[in-house]
Length: 482
Image (tube, rainbow, N blue to C red; front, side, top):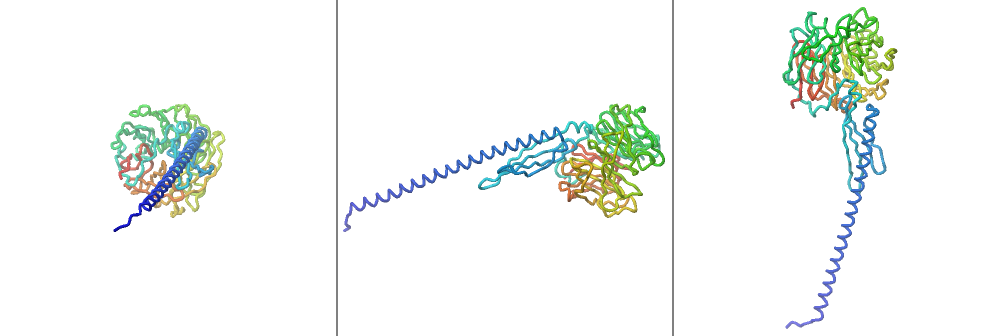
């Protein structure tokens, strides 16, 4: 028989109940503490995030203000410490008159790194006006790993060889030369369907044209003649381009060998034109505020061939070559006072190059394309140089690339947008090249499109590349077809 102990049973249950109650209280208090700390962490995160957004907005407004006062000065900077935060600005140049800017604010809480980023697109109406709108609106789409010919067209009559082109809006303006001086040398193609360019107008200006730059209703061209080297063509009606005879100008004081117009550049109501090495001055400046009546402003003797010209602000950058001088392939002139043009700087790549042929300026970088045309030049040197022109008169080396050019070939054109550089070269089967230049110290080749023609010029618009080529397919349209 089992003995009964009623008192002991009641005491046992009371002790158990007390222990359970204490455990519940401890758990409840712990939960309250955890919830309180969690709320505190969330409150701190919200506060720091709001403060980070405020700092990013303030920094972005500073960048916008700088773009309005000095567009060229907007560039990447940082990171800069600001209390517990770190602020940086990343700037990507789309074109000479457009940039993307990203402001980042980084900080660290107790358990993880955090970031706030704001983005904006910046444009410069002043630069767009100075370049007559010759600015790509958007950077190229990612890729360009598989460039392919989309369409092409030839010049009429057959036998005409393209020398240069400028694409503006829905039209491509192509210059050329022909053995028959009575043949057309200026051509207008309608690009409404890039896959099927249509020749809609042409014109014979005399002895052929070597270069073109379009501004508004006018095409300024370098005439391949010993006089009237500067010519102006009215293109207000693309189907009927008309030479403005009264606007033709003979370069003063130029004579002897090779006084023909070879290169041309429009900038801020001025036209700059260059010749090959000749007697007199090879570089000339004209005021074309009234395009029908260009006014000669000044000139400068460089004693070299002027292959290409780029102007930014008061500075003109000239790509030069000479059979007798392998120094100073890049010359920098101050053209602010056109009556007294002065040399302010130069750049001579290491080794014996002899030949700079193409230029493109974007942001604080200048891209210089080279040529291997003379026997005394070192053919083993790079063909593309990237220079920092933060100080425009003191270019400094950033990086270079070997494009694989053989002897007697050269870079004939360049356009850089975002992180991609598009290059045309005169070497058949390598006429179009795409390079990643995001790291200026180490450019990387992305793709090469080969075709039989010798490419002599290039332009970019709306994610299409347009090239001018000698012989067949004078105009070629290229797109990315990954």
